[in-house]
Image 1 (spheres, rainbow, N blue to C red):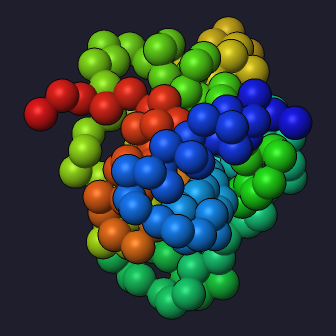
Image 2: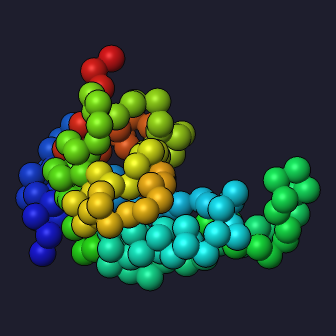
Length: 180
């Protein structure tokens, strides 16, 4: 069992039920999945960059990333339909909670000039998106072993009904938000 999952079950879930006035445990919001995404559109023909991105995602998540293909051609960006333009990994269950714990307690404090995450990145359903400019914030990725530094998009998908419930859930999980 993950430390974050046991904390969610024992402490956060009863607190959420009390704060939201829910009668059933299954009505309480929970984290459904975490998706990590890297787009390498302009580097699509650079095999070394693609290998670096794949190795980085594999070391961060412990899973093989899936290559995403372009759905339609865009001539201004020199993208053709069916061309590889990115990679993504979807985490659920135990690996998701392990990743969230490492992100909250290890990776985010290592981000340069970190003062908290913005509250504006929630959507209407309570899902949250984080964009990191450098993937070397994760301890699994050594700064000296990476030739090409790339960004990383992290999407935390919740079962919350609205923005406020999702915000409350993620605050209780320990994600550091900016005040204001």
